[in-house]
Length: 442
Image (cartoon, rainbow, N blue to C red):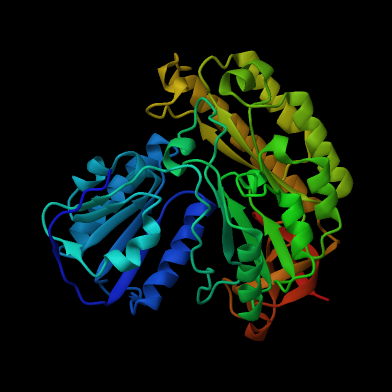
């Protein structure tokens, strides 16, 4: 329910945004920054006090909540008197909790954040302005400005929001609401705008990207969207963000395999490789089905980058369950892992379950992260002597060097001059330094 309080005028000036969480949140931040600039606001240079601070929060774990609170308190201490607004998933879940923090003058839920630039014409005095409405079904995704940001080479375009899977550990459906998709024509128009601005890669992103279009009238899907985009102007490289395993269908893979400029990089939330744990989580696939999905990806995209999310220590996870997950991950051609210890979220079914002792969770998470590091190193070393296309993103850590990203999502350093920025170049990979490939332009 919306509540509004007393307000006062402010002059447009300098703003700064601090972002926590997923790529969708980062995409929202990019669009919010662009909307603020359109209203006359300017980015606060490093070392210059801003006239407005926005914190875009995450609430997927208790640690994410803690990080947001710490950041807000620190900002209020460092910039006393500067209006501080909070938005994002934590704001949607617990607006009053955030409004009680020092310095906070406004809290916007996820459905209200697109109105930020307009609301800033009136800032509250006391108490803070709260605008956190329900996330209602039946509405198409509200388009945000195409994320054209100075200095960025790979804009993320949010084409979907919301989730209706209701995994037992996950609070995302409560804070992101039901599925909502950007109509195909608006997706095509945004990509055309990014291409016209000179971008060489765009990343299609969403909270549940594989469910794109099922809420539209008439319903459509991600594979159908890609077919429609083939003949439309767009950046030469297109990348997809995370996909649920059960939504990586044969039809989608076949479409991607023949899509010009698709970056062979897949990120899949495995969560567990033990059938009893997957069932308790409410996940709609078995370990064997997950293995088959990965095998089909690698068959169609040899050398593809493959990242996995793994949730360690879910309530009821036995030592044997963890070993089953470890064994499955070890057997797959994985590029990198994101490992998350279980974090109970208020209002989710798993929050009421008996937890695995914290020391056991810590040991399991450490083992899984070490496996991820070994997998990453093996994949990097397998690239040596090979060639690949790299999007040059900017200057590297040393004079005369550039940094970039390969199509299969590997960080690359290469010698070159600044005029190569935002260009796609063919590179031969010569060396591994830490988690980075070193190559040379061919």
